[in-house]
Length: 287
Length: 287
DNA sequence: TTCCGTTTATAAGTAAAATTTATAATACTA
DNA sequence: TAGTATTATAAATTTTACTTATAAACGGAA
View (cartoon, chains in turn orange, green, cyan, red):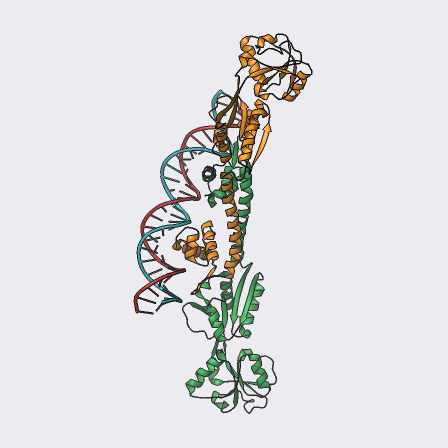
């Protein structure tokens, strides 16, 4: 069998037409080259070079082989090149998930502006689907609220947010500076879907406080909820940085949920050494 | 650096989507594959496979690499294939020289009919140029008369020929069964060129016998000489198997040159193991 | 659950290979 | 005809690839 070392040595000699220069080129010593080429010739009963007094010269068999080794080693060079480009973030792909666009997009925008060559794929989802995607390795990193401690997962906190009530126009609490959950009393409530972070936090607090809300509707996007509230269908919940410019509703902080939400960048520890993920994590610490 | 073994192991796993089947495919054990792939991933901080409970799956980085390893290992396969085809004489090139067509072409015709895939390049020349071509490795083998002993050169005798005088129409010796060189006396002689085998043999015998011929012309091809003789310009010399059907001249054996010419197949010893050369030599022994 | 079969991971030892050092042979060159 | 440059050869060494043995993880069946 023709080994890789043999082919590489042969190719170098064919390129340089010299055993000693070939040795330099592939960073081994001249006897190493001689040995590899000789073994290649011996094993296949082929003469690859004429050793003339004037120097070495390819035989016809040699020329035919050289065509192929060039092709093969060209591809190999492209492989090494690709590894290098990925390591230096000149190219690559980064799959990011998020359970909400507000915090995530700032970070992603920054990343993209720094690493133009890296393609970024964003998968938006709710808390549960995003967490599952991380665990399933379908995404490389995610911006997610309140991730549980997990030794397989690295975390960097990005922001601390409080929950606000999104009150329909003219609601009696709309002018207040802040409220407590219990103030909502029998107010009709529009709740986010099962698996959402908003709902997870609310349910925990309601249970802890022994409270119950009058849930009249369940919606699975922030946008739908905002429309519902604007149309006076009930009161919804948001985080304080999720505030768009909707003038139709009032937003009032909920006292006991002032800092309930830790928006965090996470990735599987085993992914954290990848150049793209490492760069993203580094970026996050500097925000 | 990504080594060949690593790339080959990676490629096998990518193809089979299984470390153990990959091991079978490339004839090493499963831990060997795991090790190579792991080292490849570690060295470049890259994840090439998702290890899911359901099996392994290529990552995006893995897919990008797989495209390239396929390409590279495809070329390598073609290389191995080419070696095999050359070894089995399904393809190849054989450069044969000859100092005369008569004996050589019979052998070459036989070779070609047996090994259709091997391209045969024939270089006709005189004795000297053919011998030089062998020594210079410009041809792989040659059919040549009376090669000197040379330990770098393998020989197989093909035929023993005698020299005949080619007499012009009506020459006084034309009816004889045989002649001796001295019988030619002052007859005008057409001699072959310096470097030709015919001349080499004649000159040696003339010198040994202290004879001299009346050389009136020197020609460098057999065809030209035959025409000259047919036109009555003088007497020429040929070997007995070189006789075409020329009825215009008479051919009379020269007694002391009855078995002066050993037509021999030669090659450089270091070439004799090449499949094509070995096949030719083998063929020659069976003639 | 527990056991079993299958697959991948890990660790340590081994064999094979690639490569080096040292030196010799060869052939130009001044 | 010593001097320089190149390739060849031999032996020793290092490195790499690979093996054996075993553990761990997981899914499916009893």
